[in-house]
Amino acid sequence: MIDVNELRKGVTFELDGSLYKVLEYSHNKTGRGNASIKVKARNLQTGANIDKTFQSGDRVQDARLDFHNVQYLYTDSEFYHFMDNETFEQPAIKSDLLGDDALYLKAGMEVKLTFYKGEALDVELPTTVDLAVTEAEVAVRGDTATGVSKKVKTETGLEVQCPQFVKVGDTIRVDTRTGEYVTRV
Image (cartoon, rainbow, N blue to C red; front, side, top):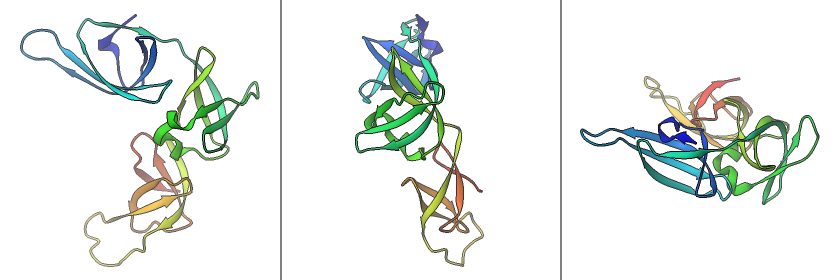
């Protein structure tokens, strides 16, 4: 059992027989009484998001997870397929469990796969990924005194706000935590 004050973004816990991963966390302390901890969490088995409020001092069951380094292979319409680097097994994850994280996956990319009781549940992405630009708006000369940006589309379908100088064929580095442009590679 862990105290709810120890819940932070990325922590996995068990509640009412389901496994949850914390997406957002806030701690509110009013003038009197106990503090309240508000958590937005994703159910790792169904993909549904919940908002839950705990009182300070409440406890939840911690979950023991296994992590394996895997390589992303391909996707069909329903599953994302990976290959374990050590055992060469090929686990698959339902596409609705990945959500927006799927837009950062490229064939051959190495990620960490989370297992719970032998079932693949979640993907831990690297901090940044390099993606090729396939579509970009045409840059217009003019007001460049401020940070003018444009929207580009990458090889995986991810849309990113970038500086005007990024063009089709460039490779850009994107932060997987925020979805923001980092640099041109």
